[in-house]
Length: 119
Image (cartoon, rainbow, N blue to C red):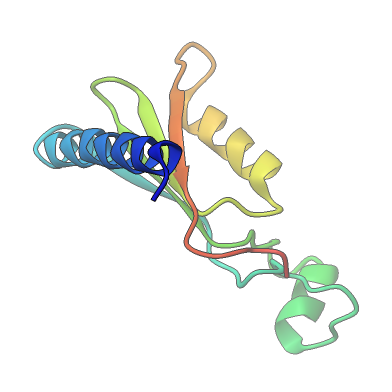
């Protein structure tokens, strides 16, 4: 193993310890979970799909569903961590801004990717 690889591994381990410490402290504080999407990787409605659900989105009887993503929010510090980032990130970020309100800011601390969300 090279010196660079060793330094990188140590750096990542230290960062993970910091994240773990932060998340553990959040468990006892004012923490929120905000669901930003529930659909599979391509969102809903799917392109060219004519199934009952996608057709309902197309004709306006069912609202659009964003690709699955979850925000963990520490209300004491307004820090936010996302679980998964999808092609719907722009709309989901706007949802976060709306959740905090116009006069309240938040800091996106990190994004945990579980797998690729490309539809």
